[in-house]
Image 1 (cartoon, rainbow, N blue to C red):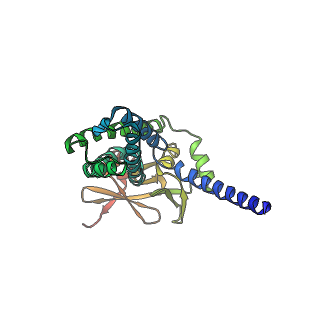
Image 2 (image 1 turned 45 degrees about the vertical axis):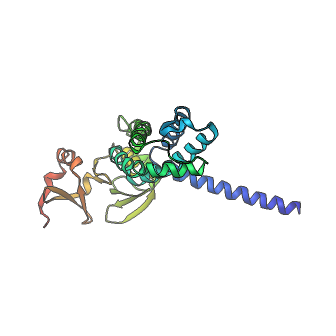
Image 3 (image 1 turned 180 degrees about the vertical axis):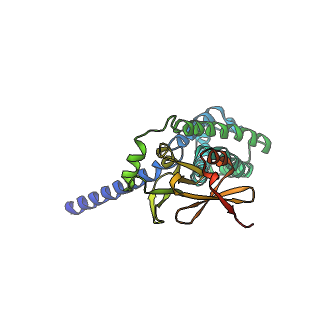
Length: 273
């Protein structure tokens, strides 16, 4: 019997260790991890002490329970949104705007519901005061996450970073044509048109490739200079044709950088429509 219990215990340890390793790998590529979670924890402490939304009238145990539930649910919402939207530091303002609208606007009906869950009847604040105080909490969380995004941006390209990254990917120098973002993965387009999917954040890959002759031309696309064979006008915008024939859009925010790099000087006509 003891042996059986021991076996179950060892099996449970292996399962937990496997799960922990998997969780660590997933969170390693989450934008602003763990700064977002730390900021929410700080917001929780601040909210318990100051009692926004009129919760200062609630006894301390139920006030703590209220904020754990409310901020916990909102943290899940923010985490899902940020993981979906943020690929580069440029995406933070958009994520903040979307989150403010989607997660803060429903707070007036959510607050009475959470209050009832913790044993308090009725709402303690008006809709307008709720939105105003929620905006303050959102600003606190956003600023902390934004600081993280700025701090992760390398000031100068590391000349050794590309070689280390290419070696990890198992790619020879000069073989990489493009890197395309796909959720928490990067699709590598190699010279000749073959592809490979690797796990990792697109923003981290672009930062590591900064010393290579190439350019990020879209929020989810980096191209090698050598892979760009021509540039085609598409209305007021541009697309780059790579060596394998695929077209990569140049977004407005990267258009001037692409022009300075000479990528748009390889014009060869336009796309219909």
